[in-house]
Length: 311
Ligand SMILES: Nc1ncnc2c1ncn2[C@@H]1O[C@H](COP(=O)(O)OP(=O)(O)OP(=O)(O)O)[C@@H](O)[C@H]1O
Ligand SMILES: [Mg+2]
Image 1: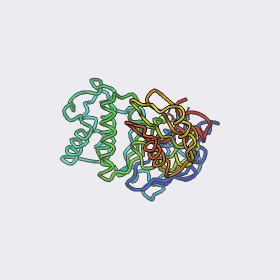
Image 2: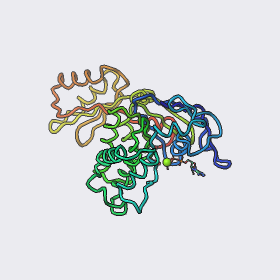
Image 3: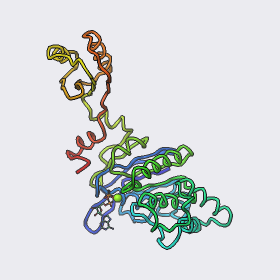
């Protein structure tokens, strides 16, 4: 679907993209994760031909996008970070306008506009101008506009920033549905939770450079040396001697008590969960919950850059 090869881009003397490469396969949701100013939007502008690259190449649908922009654009949809709708036009007219730009006409245009507005849950409010919408509804209209021509590849630049939880859920569900129907998606965000939840594969960028790429599991595996298992106990907290014994179990590094029970930190090992459950049974410790705490992408970012993604 997409090949980004050693792409670089500067604004005046500021290098914003420093030779980024990655590719997107048909049918996947690729997450582009990075903090503010990492270069995500610039990268998207380069992919959809809105910004000219200084070096490298971008190939979309197997075509060089510096030479085939028109053909590529017919099958690509972009939801820009800044909401781009015409304030004077109703939601319906906005979508009709967008569809018209993609040369849709007549009944086909009307049908596709209806489908796009239904898809984002705005059909009932189609006659309103965006000024009457909440932030989340405006975002959904922004998405509908990008969907009218049914692109094969949809690029979304932080589509959930500043939206209410209800609209956010709606948007996340819509993305999954679109993907199930066969649309390939690039999803940009600086919220790691969203990317973890939604994306098949993730590219992490920072300061114009790709710092990691892989499935969430792969990325996390790469950096995590330890595992944490959290045990919830409502009554009958084991005494210090028992916890000390647990601490001496194979691979266990640390046992930390907390309000709900305790957390066992162990070196990586496939049998950790089994061993701990065995210990609990042997020692007759009654527990209500047991959770393996997965290290998150936050760990990955921290380990690779030395800073927090939330900075
Ligand atoms: N048109 C422009 N002119 C000059 N500098 C720009 C321009 N667009 C982006 N930049 C700079 O490029 C860098 C990357 O910006 P970009 O918008 O691509 O980041 P981002 O990862 O999308 O950030 P955010 O999460 O805040 O949207 C920033 O330092 C920004 O100031
Ligand atoms: Mg951006």
